Every structure is written in C-alpha cells, then in structure tokens.
Amino acid sequence: MTGIVIGPADGLFQRLRGACLDDWRRYTRHGFVAELAAGTLPEESFRHYLIQDYLFLIQFARAYALAAYKAEDVADIRQAAKSLSTIVDGETSLHVRFCARWGIPEAEILGAPEATATMAYTRYVLERGMAGDLLDLLVALAPCVVGYAEIAQGLMADPATVVEGNPYREWLEMYSGAEYGAVAAGAAAALDRHFARRGAAGRLPGLESTFRAATRLEAQFWQMGLDRAM
Image (tube, rainbow, N blue to C red):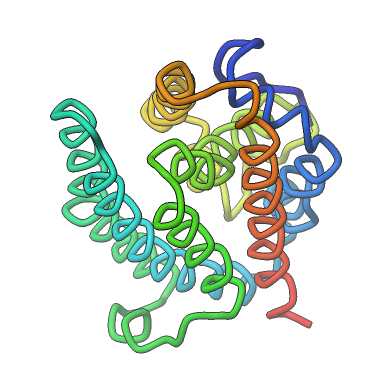
C-alpha cells in the first residue's frame, strides 16, 4: 500500500502515529483492508462490518456531544456541534441507504446488538473524553477519523488495488475522496491547535498511550469483520 501522510510531518498526529508505527501498520494494513482492496472480502464480513459501523456512528455522535461539553470556547462548541449534526443528520441516513444497497434493511441494523469490538473502541473513546480534556478525546478519535482517509487514499494510490469490478469500490472511493480527506485533514489540524493550547512535553506519553490503545482497538474492529466469515 502506498504511503500517505495526512497533516504536517511535524504535527501531533504524525508524532503519535510514529510512536506506535508497528500497531499503526497492523491496523492500516490489516487483512480486512487487504481483502477490501483485492475485492475478495467475504460479503458476510462486509455486511456485518456495515451493521456494526452504524452502531459505531451512534457512539461517535455521543463523543462529539461530549466534545461540545468539554470545549472551552464558542468556536470549539460550534465545531463539535457541526460534527455531531453531520453524523446524526447526514451520515446515519447515508449509511442506512448504503446498507440497503447491500440488502440490509434498516430494521435489521437497528435491531442488531453491538459487537464486543464495537463497544470496546467506542466506550474507550468516551472514557478518555470523560476522564481527560478535549485533547484527550480528539486523540482517541483520531485513529478512526484520520486513519480511514490514510487507508483508503493509500489503497486507491496503489496499483495493486483492484478497482474495476471490485464490490467494495464505493467504500474505497468514499473514504479516499476529497470530501472525506478534508474531514481527516481538519481532524489532524484540530490536534495541533489543541496541543498548542493544552500541550506540553509532559503530556506526550499519555497521549501516545491513548493513541496506541485506540489504534489497537480499531484493528480489533477490522478483525471482528473477518471473524464473521470463519
């Protein structure tokens, strides 16, 4: 997979990514991702992932509501509210329609229980946000928000990725596109902005620990999808 750099090379996101590079590669180059790129991922795995990703979105909406509470000025409240609205008023509906194209009715999505991997990462994000400040919360969110763009952009830039006839092409194009790329770049910029306000050298070990744990939990989320077809 072609290397993609999101955010400044000396920015906080790249520093955190570099501090757990082996875990990051296990996440961004996971077997689930590799099979997406090859178009060989079992459809049962992808359908299970889609259902769990919807439930994941609900918890991420709660995380951005918490971000608004943790914010210390109107600009940050406004940004958190915008992210919350984007998920609740836009992404959830888009996700339901995407699932329908894969033969998954809305009733099945809403009636599905959360998988352990879904609960593990989303509740970890919320716990870090409740225990810490806004920077802690944003760092816990970053492997997902920024990582998806890095994964998809890297795959679409890789000549080995199967595009024509790939049943997962829409997913790859959505997360590699300019619109989602702007979301990821904005999240990386927010990390730098809040680290400048609230950061100091003494905070880096804790932030690295949070980022590493969240990255490992994201890899487990991919594994959940693969395990479904076993």
